[in-house]
Length: 133
Image: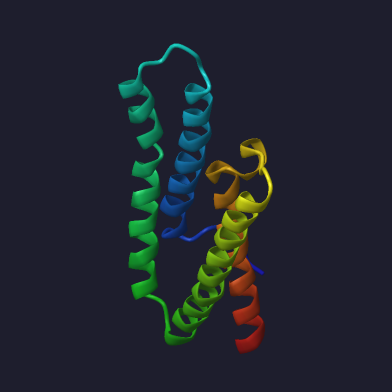
């Protein structure tokens, strides 16, 4: 293998940079929002900061989908076809459990649930890749 096969291509560096910026801004916003004494307007503004790099990343991913070959598009579609219903299942289950028992918001709030969506997506990718490769 050559050195280039182990490094990122030109198109992946901006996506990686946006991922780092998004994750950093998310955790930075969480740290700021845990501070006392901030006004509501400032808290809302801070909460919106991570949306900008994530929207840019989403734009880049959608543009990247357009350049994929037919097989890779099919794999991505199947991954989403697995992830989306699993996300609905998780939200439905937690909604019903919340009616049945007290779920701690320290364990089951929205800020704890969104990482599951990535897990569901990557499970879908793994399943689709195993099917087609």
